[in-house]
Image 1 (cartoon, rainbow, N blue to C red):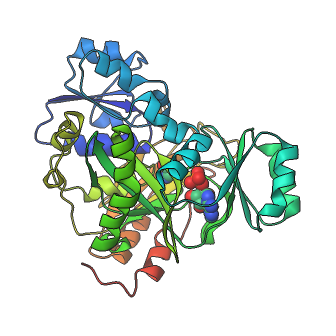
Image 2: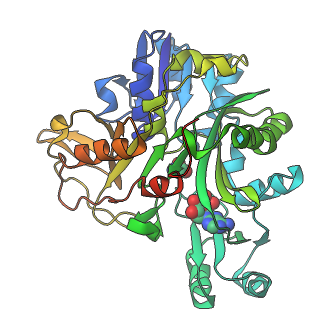
Image 3: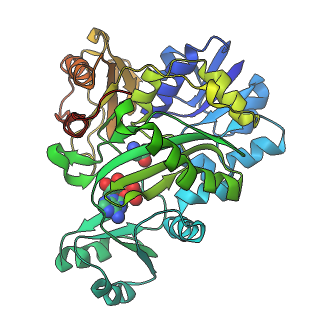
Length: 408
Ligand code: AMP
Ligand code: GLY
């Protein structure tokens, strides 16, 4: 099978690394790719993905990021009868617009935080008294995980009004553990991937502004069988039944004392959740993806290692604000026992340099969650670039909250 991956971040490197190990894959291509992906796939610089797939005779295309999905790449491929993993542009609006997504959840009765949609600062101010603090303010459109502000008081809420674009979603603050629940959907059914947890804030102990994700771990104990089937039934399958959803449906959940509540839908795999998930995947990934693109997916297509995995993101100085790029990365070759997935890197004559906010995702399996965390940080210790920043506590929430849960 000839496979094309669209994208060029850490998620796509992890997808490429796993697909390269799929027995059924004979050729692997990626556009645009990155220096890490170039180790396992042929990289192209075309954004005319349909033309690229036709000229290479691609059997299956997998879309990593949301932007090409929102722009309709899946519709284009399907019009030509080509297999592709991802949702149509109409279904990608579940991620592309918070307003659409919240109204959709409300209509289908999918559990989500109480909200109001507001068109202006005046309307938002008038709505403040109907909410308690902390209060959550969200930009409507795509914002790479940075369009959400949690205001602790009125002054912070006022400040947020000047930073976010309208329309805005105002919603109640929910408390609990966050879980990334991702399902592969084939238009009529869905199979859940293993659960994972992201770390969205820039600093340790969940301090500072939100980022695209500073690290993630996946451990089977995050959700038991009952929770998994209940989330599939109440959150994922209603979407598939209502819309014929295809591709990855990612529910960002808050596990509240009243049960799981959807914070957001994404229409793709998570970054960095994909990195630990791909390390745990233990089956022919290309076969599973092709089955989903053909509308013939079954739970037997996915198998997982019981071992947990952890990914620590190494970010550039300044992230999630303006970043410094072009810094030489040392120690990439030295990391044993880990997979170092490239995100924002660039190959130059002097070697591989930083090129963006999130630079690398150092990812490792372990016999236990603790061991996978230790293995990932052992890999991190080998790598250096000027201004490198990373969280020292990836997976620690899991160590605390899963302590009392036994492996199923
Ligand atoms: P979102 O892009 O909607 O997932 O929001 C980004 C992050 O903001 C989430 O991962 C949560 O950490 C936080 N967040 C969003 N909505 C809420 C909420 N209603 N209550 C508490 N935290 C939230
Ligand atoms: N890690 C969160 C996301 O991919 O949206």
